[in-house]
Amino acid sequence: MIQGINNGVAKFLATFLLVNMMSSAAQSQDLTLPQDGAEPVILPLIGIHWAQVRPSELLEVFVGPAEPCCEGRIAITGQYTRTDDALTFLPAFGFETGQDYVARIRISEANDDFVSFSIPPDGLAVDALVTATYPSGDILPENVLRFYIHFSTPMSPQVAFDYIKLRDAAGNVDDAAFMRFKQELWNEDRTRLTVLIDPGRIKRKVATNVELGPALRAGQLYTLSVEGGWPSADGASVLPPFSRTFSVSLALRERPDVSLWQATVPCVGTTDSLYIAFDRPFDRHLLSKDIQVAAGDGQIVDGTVHVGEGETSWSFTPNDVWTQSELVVHASTELEDVAGNNFHDLLDHLETTAETEVATSALPINLNSCSQ
Image (cartoon, rainbow, N blue to C red):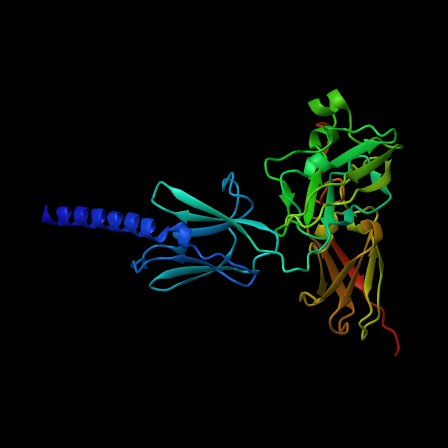
């Protein structure tokens, strides 16, 4: 009985100390905020012993505004450092100039406080521009799934579809073309936005496709535009108008197959590039990471990847000379073409489509034996 009382008292005291420790730690007005990307966030702990509390229980930092925060967001990864009187957090890759952040501080077990901040411009602000869009080809399949839009500087969030439009040859805007998510699909520094055509407009015999038809039709011209006026994240500039026009070909409804790829091979003993021409355009950013070259002994070869024009070719330059004549080019079975088809499955297939085995994704290569 005494043991039970002692355990109960110990539990009560631990809870009491934790709540008070959090309350004392969460004096958000005293929070020290970074003034450049290399500085940390510092939370004073006012001399409270808190060794048994995880740092993330007291302080987390998220990308984006404080309202709302932070459902659906993942806290920034970084390093926590604790002393007797302060908790310090420094992100793994530093804070970005012009980016909005919010620090979440635990006041009690049931309450959080939020402090918004951003890194002030350093006087070297970059004008907002669209620097690239992918797929980059002039001819895209009718069932192209996604576009990547790259910007020269971080952009203001949650307003993308006020500016991004898909128009037909007559200039008509298709307001239902794009999939709109609760959170826009930005990369970490908000310089690349992923925009998806609504899959319901792509998949045959799906209600949206039946009601509205496909967003893109073979044989037609379309324009992807980003209208002017979109402010950069730091407020230093606004985006000028941008547009690109492309034509549409028949839909891609066959899975990728490496047997359709054509390789131009280098010579053993050189650092010349291995070049592969595809039968179709592939997803630009997956191409950068989802193809590897292995030597005959199974070791992955280190080198530099270059994605060709229109995402219809790929080349690889080794860091060191080719020493083995037998290679294997391995494509991840998750590598997608621009229509979202991978080696496992098609994005759009009818119920009558027969199931088949996973298509082969390994391409054997024999290098040339060239005299020096």
